[in-house]
Length: 512
Ligand SMILES: Cc1cc2nc3c(=O)[nH]c(=O)nc-3n(C[C@H](O)[C@H](O)[C@H](O)COP(=O)(O)OP(=O)(O)OC[C@H]3O[C@@H](n4cnc5c(N)ncnc54)[C@H](O)[C@@H]3O)c2cc1C
Image 1 (tube, rainbow, N blue to C red):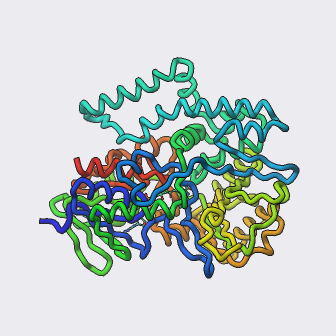
Image 2 (cartoon, rainbow, N blue to C red; image 1 turned 30 degrees about the vertical axis):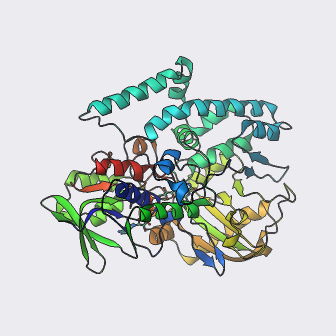
Image 3 (cartoon, rainbow, N blue to C red; image 1 turned 45 degrees about the vertical axis):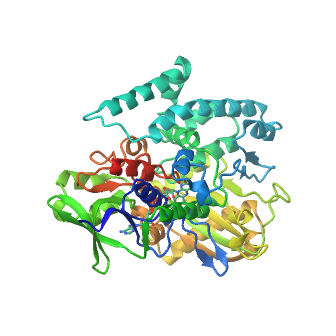
């Protein structure tokens, strides 16, 4: 008999979700995490004495209500906030723009500069609201088996088609028209305010190898916006705490500091894991929430690997394009475009042209003179992350290549930090004097610390091809060609982001 029914590799949000589901279905479950802390990319850490981050992530609006309900996360401390705070799009020649999901509040912001865009934003959000149920049919269900469809697969396909049809003919055609468009084309036909276009485009381009003029950008925006709900109070840290409590309460055994070095295989079947240090543990099923490249190219025994499948794993694209800067600040710096304001989120990227130029640099393995920044200030909601009055700025820096020309030398790291601070000083001129300490994580650092191949934040690019069949043919429905081995992390359908969906859907498949 095996030591466990299910072993889950990785203690990030998806690994914790998969483990909690498996245990809920009565499976004896062991979760193994390589690092000493749980949470994966969402684990919070001290980066300067007495100053902590909330993890490298920002946005928890993608966490699905149905997962929280099925795992009873509220009983384990999860609280959803009523609404998301606005994002400030700052400017040097005026007040900038506060971007709310609520169309009326954004329209009020735009009243003085572009009432037309205020109305257009209302129409934009209405369209997203109507498209949401259609898109969540795709994102919140395991993909149908198109090779040998069973009754369930056919029903699912039928329901998806019906959902699309129920949109009405005009809206259905509009959705099909929009999906392949670039963001530049789609947003350009709706709006006239460059700052608004850039503010809407940036989150859809985050962590992608594409710019506003690349095809299918509109699809990324649709997926990101249509699946967003209420954020988690306390941020990613609070989500990890609730998931861990839910998993432990159902009897999941959790071991941190336990790196899986190899999978064990027998007669073509995966039968367990070998840890660094040599310990072997057997299980009926192994669910891996680490990224697919690491799983298939490092952990699966080479002798078991079919040639074609190895080629597909090698070809799977996971080129990281983002860095992280954490700043410990003695005070919240003044913001001349909004005197006295202390926004929780600031997005720096003036227009689509600036975003496109920043992406150009990455294509040639450089980083931009004017990087695109997404700044969050977690200390406004969680003051315990820093001493009283101090703040933490958590800055996601977009369009920073993993494979920088000449490599990530100390001089290049300094150079990147210098450019990020120069961009921040433009809108927060006093920031330099408030800085007590900093941490810079290049895509290579993200790979080393968090074990994500290529430093890719989503365990592989979310281009349309790798979204529709994720990660690639042969393992797109959680099961892999190796009986007993399943994918359950961001490299599985429906992809990355703090959603908990891959973990939940994979566990259902494993326990079937
Ligand atoms: C900088 C950054 C910012 C992001 N911002 C956002 C955001 O704002 N909102 C959002 O929704 N998403 C964001 N994302 C994406 C999101 O974080 C990820 O998609 C999600 O956290 C991944 O969860 P996961 O459980 O699938 O994987 P991970 O969090 O990567 O967890 C995988 C775990 O497996 C462990 N592991 C790997 N190999 C082994 C091994 N051999 N043995 C044992 N354990 C192993 C790792 O240590 C890790 O803990 C961001 C990602 C990054 C990096």
